[in-house]
Length: 138
Image (cartoon, rainbow, N blue to C red; front, side, top):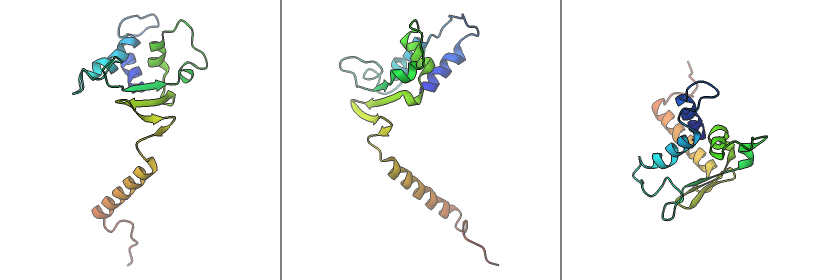
């Protein structure tokens, strides 16, 4: 999602270093959060941080975004949209439940899921090409 924020910003900006025409990073962020939520069946309960809303949050490690240097004049949303990468995501919360923390998904056993995927794909492959992988004797 962080890459998509940058993509939207860059695709819709006019060329030039001093170009101030919209969209600004804050507008792109709002498009992805509040306005994006308005397009879902959960509109009115997600998309903003407010009392009574579902707690869908992403915690960003600010040192990873700002390091090694960020000018003090840079607005925080500008830095987030322009510089944040996936490795800066420290925690993700969906409806108040932590689902990702410090590089680990809390509700999914990744190794078990990958093994199940391998087994399913292998079974489908054997069904589709029964003689594949067998040595052919002549």
